[in-house]
Image (tube, rainbow, N blue to C red; front, side, top):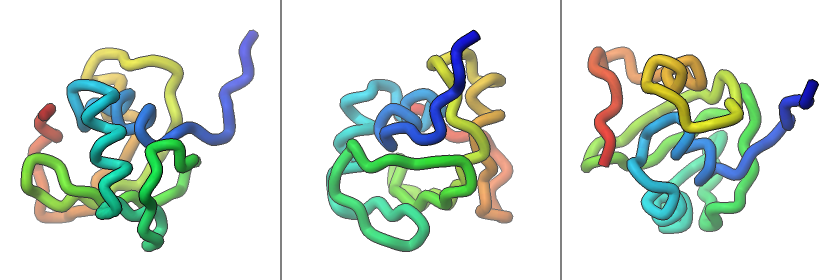
Length: 99
């Protein structure tokens, strides 16, 4: 049995959670200097995230506020991806669109 890692690169997590269609787009979003983890601005796609972290980033022109619930081990179907996070924007009632 393989142990689940305790942290994961933010670009990989954003891709696993299906916020971006490709890992390259996720890396670009994480490295543009406008992404925040727990309120602190990050500028590198290699920044590590863990369950409980709160992410703020722009996706398709919308600001997203997401809490990491789990890391995941693959980019699975959308139903699996939705278990990796909790959307903290109470006004948002639609699932994320893939860029």
